[in-house]
Image (cartoon, rainbow, N blue to C red; front, side):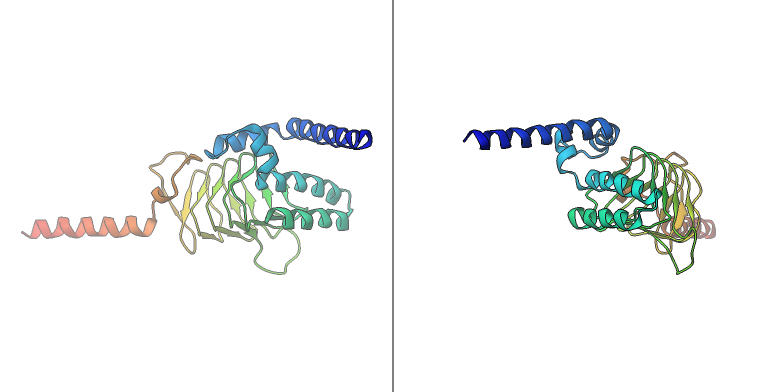
Length: 228
């Protein structure tokens, strides 16, 4: 009985120490998740149960080993993370601070992807390549970018700061800062000339084709009224 109590005490100490260390190292990321996810109920819930945060924790470890050229160990950690979280981040990808993946199942981030600070990804996002070429072949994502559910950002392109990529968009060209992109292929539209906020509702993203159609319909009505 005493032996089991000692074992349980050691386990409790190890778990508590791990929680304290992770809380210190990933404090900003946890607070960021609480800010961006209305379903987050507590700091401890995010720290222990959010797969997006766990994928980032594993990636920080894998990326360290990748930078010192221990590629097999780095890939081993990333594959373990993939099976545990459903999120695949290549250990070579560079990710900034305050990064958050909401839900996250099916997210794929390629080897040469570069992600800035304050980026938010939803489930099913792919930051991928477009061919077998060597060198930089994955996108560079600026600061405070939001990429919606199922969006694909492909190739060595740049998405400017404060931009919003709509759900299921396919982006294959550079995106200027403060832009909204929707459709297949992705088309840049305006959001009332304002900076995109991370709280933007997906259903309120403007479609440039619909904007053009509405402008044409308005023009036709004006011409018809003149004819009358």
